[in-house]
Structure formats: structure tokens, C-alpha cells
Image 1 (cartoon, each protein chain N blue to C red):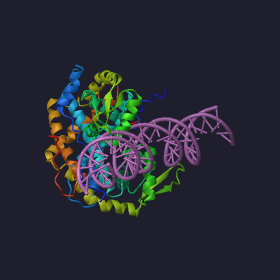
Image 2 (cartoon, chains in turn orange, red, brown, purple):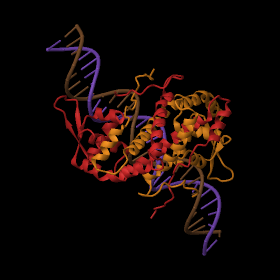
Image 3 (cartoon, chains in turn yellow, orange, cyan, red):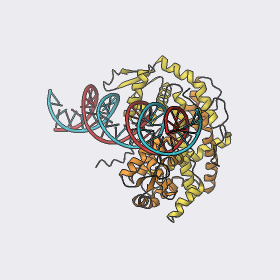
Image 4 (tube, rainbow over the protein chains, first blue to last red):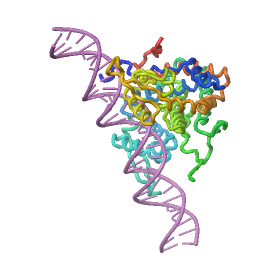
Length: 188
Length: 188
DNA sequence: CTTATATAGTTAGGTTCCTAATCATTATAT
DNA sequence: ATATAATGATTAGGAACCTAACTATATAAG
């Protein structure tokens, strides 16, 4: 119904090599145009995937964040502290609070005060929440698998390796100029 | 002061293969765990890159979207219609209106009513906007290049190829179940 | 024991981008 | 010519996630 297949927006914005070259030439920079192209394509892909992911999960009445929270709960015997969830999901505690609010409203999780520590309020996956995950699993995983279906087993391995290294390199955007990409920040 | 190098949040959430396996096993699905891992890692990478990108551009007083708009203007002789910008950037016209509002407030672009068609209002890159791009170019491109610095030339080619195919596959999340990934709508 | 400090969670407010509805102008059909 | 439809841009309101400030509880220091 509302899901008109009018191809919505569909981000026709695929950066090209000539585009990258032109940008670099304009300022006479000593930069590899292909490197810029890789960066641009990855950004475009990330944005597209993020958008597609929201559409995918909205079919089940969830958002990407709320699904990930439920899945993480399921991976931890159905009970976790908000702070643990925040760390696992890589979002702030404030964000987790918001995710829980909606999931609780929808009956998929519940909150319980801890007796050990009065500050803590653990989050529990309800039976309804578990059922939701169970019901969506077949389609969800089938779609994810289909997403990488154009790569064979070996290519997937290569892709994982390369993607891992590029992901490390992302810190070049945020860190000190000229510093090497940092190893994962370890403890603290 | 609070110049804590505590590396903020930093998304410590790197999905592992055992995690993917566990999820699939839980429901006895016939799915390749590595495929799920690739999908999960790409999602994580996309989110991380998006976040890092905002931090990067905020150093220059811009957001990712506003930078892209300026760069696209520069690529088109400094003048474009909002609808063209929306298409090039892969966002809605409503979003473009918002981006222009702020860029105009900051003096980096200006609006001009068209004489041909009274509905159109073209967007123009001001001298100040061009200067902004000129000033940020060296650092911006150096950082992008550094981001993929852990890949050699050949690996970059391979990565582009594989990423391209995965990007095509993203439509598996949004399209009909079981349908083949669509060819890109190639603007020729 | 009382005061200072750290920690868990929440609230308040901001940013980015979205969809849907609206306004103004142009094109089309009677 | 006039009503109807299509189109370009904008406005209004919503969703996701952020930072910073706040509340309540726990721990440490004197």
C-alpha cells in the first residue's frame, strides 16, 4: 500500500573516478584519486545500507537499534544492564534509555530494579520479545544472506579482510593528522 | 581541560563469527554464518564511518551533507537547482532545503530566483563558499587518503569491485523476498 | 558519621535526515 | 478562458542518535 515500489529515492549518487580526479586536480593535490574513490564509495554504501536497514526492520515494527538491542539481549540469556547494552551496541546510555522506553511500551522487554545495587535497573527480554525474534529470524537472515549473495565464499573472506583494514583506517578521519591508524583502544 | 583522550564512545561493537553462528543455530536456519558476518561488519563499518565523517566535517563548521552539497555545487560551475542537488546527493528535496538554509545563513551559498521558471530558485556557491572548499581541501583529502592507507593499489581495486557487488545486494533488504538484486539504475 | 566523589540511569535539548502536506507557478484539457 | 493536474520548493512534524546536565545510589576520605 504505502509501500509503493516507485523506487523511492534510491540514492542515484554513485561517485565516479573522474569526479574524484577533478576534485583533486582542482587544487593540485598530491593525492591518489582511487583512494578518494574508495572512501567516497564506502560512505555512499554505508549511508545506503543504513537507510535500507531501517526499512527492513520497520517491516517488523522495529528500528535497527531496537532490533540490535533485542538480539543482544537474546545473546545474553535475556537479561542485561543498560550500560552493558550501550557498550555492546556501541551507542550511548542515553540512546539505550530511549530504545528501552519504546521496547517496553511495546511489551518486548521489561525493566527490573536490582537488589544488589539500587542504581541498576536490568532489562529483561519478555516472552513476547523472544517470540518477535523467533518470528522474524527466517526472513531477516535470508535477506542478509541474499545481500552478500553476489560474492562467493572466497570473495567474502577477502572482503572481510579488506573491510577490516579500511575500518581501522576510519580513525584517520577523527584522529591526529598524520598519525597512524590506531589499534583498537583496548581497555579504558 | 576535559580534553579527555578517553576516545569517547568508539563503538567497541565488532560482531564476531561465533556470534553470528549462535544466532543462526538458535533457530536451525540454513544460512551461511560468514555471510551474516559480512553483513554485520558492513553495517558496523557504515555506522562508524558515518559518525567519523560528521566529526571530520564539524572541524570545518560543516556537516557531511552540507559539505557534499558545496562540493557538488563546485562540480557544477557553482550553480544548481535544489532538485538537481537532491538527486546528486541522494537525499530528498526537503533535506536540501534545510541544508541550503544553513549554508545561506553562513554565507557559503546564496539563492536566486530563476527568470525562466518562477518555481525554480537556483543555488549559487558564493566566493566565501569556494574559499571554504579551497581551505579544507588539503586536509580533507589527506585524511580520506589515509583512511584507505592500509590497502595497496591492487587491494583497493579488489575492494571497489567487491564493495560494488555488495552494494548492489543491499536491495535484498528492501526489495521483494527472493528477488534478484537489481541492476543499478545507471544514469547511463 | 559526615562530606566528597564516582557511577547508573534518565531527562533535556540539538543535529541529521525523513515523509506528508502545503504554496506557488506552469502545463494541459475542456 | 478556466478548471485541473503536475511540478519546484518549502513547511511541519517525526525518528534516530548525540552531548551535557541532572537524580539517586554507592563508595571513599577525613
